[in-house]
Each structure stands twice: as C-alpha cells, then as structure tokens.
Image (cartoon, rainbow, N blue to C red; front, side, top):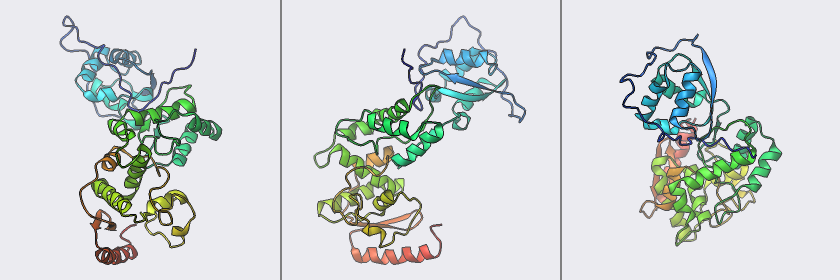
Length: 336
C-alpha cells in the first residue's frame, strides 16, 4: 500500500464533522489560561492529513494537553483559524487551556522541520531547504524532473509556491515537491494566470510576476508591472537588475556593475530584448495579481532612491536626476 502524503502547508482540517451535543454540559472542562513557564512539560504529537476537528481534539486530550476534548472542539469551531492547522508534527505544552493549545498548533516555531519557501525564492534555494529537511540532491533533482506541471510549463522554476510546508514521516521528495506545485495551482490567481491572456502566454505572465516580485515593494508591484509592459510594447530592453541577480545567484546587492550586465545569458535583460525565457523565482499572490492587472500609466523608468521610496517616470531626464539622488544615498549608506 502506497504511503500517502501527509503534507502540504495549511492543509484544511475538516471541522464539519464536529458538533456540540445539546445534551452535553454547557461548559466543557478546561484548564485556565495561565502564563507559560520554562518548566512547562511538552509533548510531540503528529496530526495525520485530513484529521477532523474531533480527531484533533481527542489527540490533544489523550496526550494530556487539554483537560477535555470538548473544550478544544468548542474553541476550534468558534475560530476560523483552526482550518489552517497544518498536518504533521507539533511540539505542544501539556496542561494548557484549549485556547492556548490552538495558538500553539498555529505557531510555525513549534513545527519541527518546517520548510519555508520565501516569495521570489529560486529553485536552487528550494533545493537547499529540501536538503536540510533530509532529502538528497539526487532525490530532489528527480522530483523536479518528475513533477506534474500545469499545461504549457516545461520547467518547475516559478511554480514552487512560496509558503510554509510541513510533511509527515515517510514523505518522499517527489511528494514534497508536488505538494508545492499543487499549492501553486490551487491559488485562484494562479488559475487565472495559467489561462494566459491575449498578449502573453501563461509562462510569460508568470515570468512578469517573478520580475515584479524581485524588483519592487508590494505597493509598487502594479506600477512595475506596467513599466515592463510599456517597455515590451515599444521594443525597449527591460534592463532589470533582478534578472542578472538570478543568473549570478546573488541576493542583497543594490549596485550592479557594468561587467555584470555583459554576462552572456538568455536571462540577462541588459543584453537580450524581451522577456527572459522563464520565471526568475516563485512569485507570491500579490505579484501575480500585478502581472495580470498592471496599473495605468505611461512610465518607462523607475528607481528606488531610498528604502521605501521608488519613483516612476516617462522622462529619461527625470530618471537621471533621481539616479544621482540614488547614488548619493547609496554612498551615504542608506541601503545598508
């Protein structure tokens, strides 16, 4: 019998099977909500994939975490966050209130071997996270090759959805990677993006989203998306630093040398016209929304002159004046 994946972050746990018996006590036995102490005993529990609320409540009671299963059930039913309890291992304090038990179940710091995929993460960075989890490079590479991708996609870069993942014992690298791809396809905005548009294919839209993710703050995403479209429309090279950073696999560099812009790569938008051949990372929901719905404007240039201060313009003269301000701020250490 195949081992079933007990994975996927924020897996919805069925609470519909729960109900409060009218004949039951009006107040379920519960421990008081006290301040946690260093000597508080803890226990590791494993929540199977697809566990119902009643099953979780029973598990907590049997492990002497809550005073009664009914107490946790009532708290879970009244708090929609309980739907986001992740399957897998959890480290929980004993003899605590049902409310505290729920808070600890939702605390990612109490989930051993949690895999965190950040917005804009590269496939190479996901590989590192999976290796730390215990998979070998060979297993991960095979999982990337064998993953079932959305129609139209030939490479997994950009499809490893940024989120926190926890997996049960026995999960394979292929199952873990597929869970990340499936998480991407489950998002409503992803489903819209996969359909493509009149102007761009699904791969191109995801590529735009990945660049938007890498180039701006959330508030600037729609404008960055418009700049990309405006440049493509007039045949202007994108010349975006993030594409070179992707090639070099470096992060945190504000300054890009002239030598770096000469790198021979199809992803280098300083040397190649048009979009790169594929995404330069896995974008989050907001970046994908911006790729689909850019702001309205005629901007062709943008520059971050100081942290939190990104400016957009159509004028090369205005851009160059802002570039001087950026250089001044960079030399003064504003971007450290």
